[in-house]
Length: 591
Image 1 (cartoon, rainbow, N blue to C red):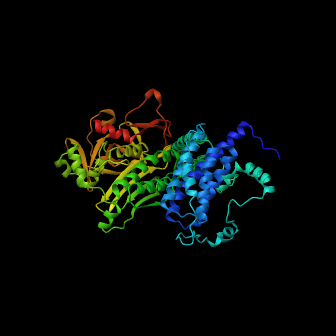
Image 2: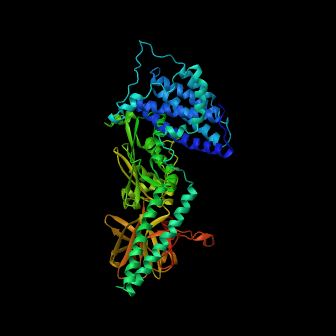
Image 3: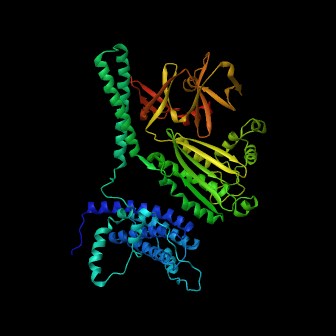
């Protein structure tokens, strides 16, 4: 039988498919190996890990990626020994397997960069070979065979049919034919391993999705114009048959546009588990390095978030979790002395709340030391003891978001340099999100992040200021209140109002954006907005209502305008500016 021949385009397509599927397998290996360390008797999980390594080995061999094939083959040997109970699952064995996964990632990057052989895998292959050479436990040794986790009844028949060996011995006269079959099937093996049907999904370039989003944005603008024109016609020609027919057609266009917008947005959505699944490995490595015992609990990984938001949230979450493990959780000895379980807990949860995604990072550690934060703030001349006495605990906690602020008693490789929390806040602000802290001494800390589902089309609160109308992203609007002149007080000549238990600074939009004096009013409409941990009241002339707005760039000619994120076209064809709250807060501080 002759070898199959592929032209250059076909080969590039096969390699691209191989890279995508292999990276999915590698990400799954990271999470599954950490899980196996906690569940050493889970044979189903061990078999799944073995199949992943076996699939990578076969596909790499077919495509001629010999370094990757050798490495995965050695990993396969170790996994097979674990399945046969010739090795036991220990932290030391898992260290070597996880290090092997890191080398697989590096080797895949070499393939992407067309620099095969750049990563030296001889060291890790040597470790795997030494581990594989260890003798099986004798009858006098205490190693227990791995027990299978009972399968659900619906899977029982499938489990029984699975052979105990994925690589059974092959007879000599079958070798040639089977090798040929393996080579022809290797290119699609990763896809088969991941359990996906080839005709049930299709890969689409992100640029095409972005074009669809832009076109739907234009459709939304057209829909808004149609609905506004209809309202004018209905007012002038109420009751006419043709107007009623137009209203019905417009209602249908409105419904379809909304549904199409939601469908396109969902196409860009990815489960947040794609980010969350990176953290079990990181927490496992950190806890071993710091000699702490940590359980990472993940909830809501199926919650979906826009791809652009998802890409930006990974680094802030990584920093927050590292801080929880390093600063938040105590050592087993400290926890025992406090009457706590020796194993600490870090919880990472995500859920949808209206048009926002809420992400929580919770730990049951020592909590944040409010007194230490106060002391550090005075040392750095950020505030005075008199001013501190007027601040709430939440306001004092917000100091940790200042650049270079750290209360760590010692600097480690993980944290303590005062670099990071300010970057976390900046990244959250860029995503039009908010971040809040709460803590209780010796009980733990909770960090809550709220993010918009998408950044392309947003719900906006339309407000009027003089002759102008502005759109404020609704995700950042906390509430609206009406206050009288008698309720306004002044601190350091700056207007504030008392909103329940907090003192809220307020600023007039006209005076802020157009350098005009705050005009006298019988009553003040205040829009309370939040950004990260900061809150501000914006005084406007009137509240017009809520509308779906499409964010458009204001172009290179105008460049960066402080306080403005972009523009949108209203139903009447007029251009309205969309407020950029991150820039607006900076403007308030400058003034």
